[in-house]
Amino acid sequence: MHPHPIRAAVFDIDGTLAMMDKDSGTYAALPGAVQALTALKARGLPVLAYTNGTFFPPAHYYPLLADAGLVLEPGHIVTPAAVSARQLAKMGVRRLLVIGADGTRVPLREAGIEVALTGEGREVDGVMLGWTKDFGAKDLEEAAQLLWAGKPLYATSIAPHFAGAKGRLLGISGAIAAALHNATGVKAKVFGKPETIGLDDISDMLGIPAAEMVVIGDDPKLEIAMARKGGAFAVGVTTGSVDEAGFLAADPALRAHVVLPGLQTLMTQRWW
Ligand SMILES: [Mg+2]
Image (cartoon, rainbow, N blue to C red; front, side, top):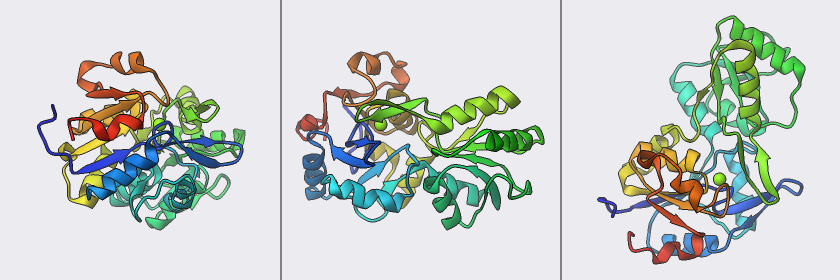
């Protein structure tokens, strides 16, 4: 079914491996997730978790997921903020106005990029958006002024929503990007899913081509589209954003190769 051997597995987190309770900030593993990770590791396959969320820096996800029984190896949790930071540093970006919480700020600083907040001066190379609960009119105003002055707009993700324990959660950076686009006409350059930059990053890290990876996720427009664009094997699960019809509605070129009701049946699939 897939013309390449599968040598690594890249899981989405929210709606795929686990569900976050936004009130408590804790994760609960979805059925079959713990068993799937254990079985894959026993087979010697690298297992990565690539979330589109930027609630936390990558380091914060390890204990949160481990508390839910999902143990990932060091370096094997990837966020779009970390992907963005590495790419922006390569592009020569030095200082950014950031509308985003520590999940965005920490990876930027780790990549050597200075983080400026609203009111800290407009000598920046662009505007960066990530998840945050704390933003207001002053932030939007300063960002709009920078975009009107010709600075570029970057975003970890512009996904409209993602799966939470109690239903859909708003994609904050997408909402801010839409507000700024409305004001300025500037579209954000996105680094997270469905762009393939993160998949390429993982491929470089593991030394395994994307064609030899399986990507498993709950959102046809995010990880499934990324997997198909990058040439990976794409597996959809219906435990998060959409049902089976939602996956089948995608353009055939970007559609999941397989749709499963959850991770319980992942390891018995014949395409491994
Ligand atoms: Mg998800």
